[in-house]
Picture 1 (spheres, rainbow, N blue to C red):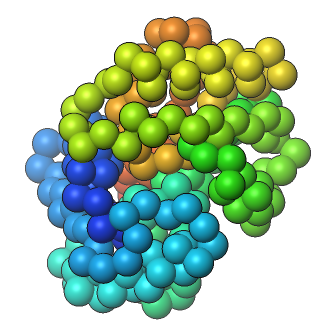
Picture 2: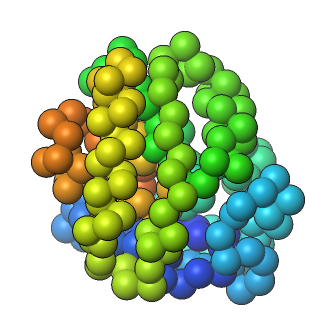
Length: 223
């Protein structure tokens, strides 16, 4: 499997985080190409920035899609996923948050969504509604955790982990049976949060790789 991982923001260290999550679930012989936008926002903090990131997604896919079997879109609002599917109809294209949510549905009836920054919560609620899972997502948390944007792609920051753990426990008390990490900078925290909270915590990029693999297998089986 030749997988293209797109980060439509300009933060290379976030691309490294995304890529680390993807590589953790690749199989022998799989190839990963992770690409970063050359212009636009460092991180998405508004609907306007999301539109800029979408434009970068189109550019990056156009430049690299011919050499891949599938695309994972590494932006937590899934951005241009729907339009990219229209433009590249022969390729499976999976967004990280939709993959996390659909995977969570396999292990829980009631889901919590953990992201960063309350200003974006309306956009996340809108994305969940677009996917059709509003009735399944029963809790949201979006703490302000500046340290989560560390430039060290391998770092599990203890302070960040504490705040994320608190948010997971709050959602668990509200009925969430599984948590989806809706944030590229949250890649890498799933295992530590599982250990802290004792419930499933889903890394969207890892889930997306699994969904891509299934999509490719289904495509091959029908040829």
